[in-house]
Length: 128
Image (spheres, rainbow, N blue to C red):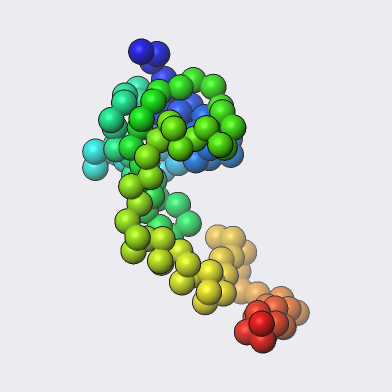
């Protein structure tokens, strides 16, 4: 069985767009294995359960197969099992329906023009 770092595996199964994003998530405590914070250099084994905190939800996945290289999106279900509870998926759906907006940290308050643009976009979504 190959030895693969956690950040490399998360990138390979398309949980993060880049390996450096996966590394930053591990450093920031957003990735846990068996309830413990995981370092990016930790080796991944088959059967490990991984929790990923992203976008306001907690994603849970189980490792089915350890790989080193990134694969196409169609092959990902054979490599991992999604254990995310339905409540988390409903929370994500609700945030999308409520027109959840997220501003960059440190961006400050929206200007009057920004606010009017946001209001205009929200009104269009409500009319659909």
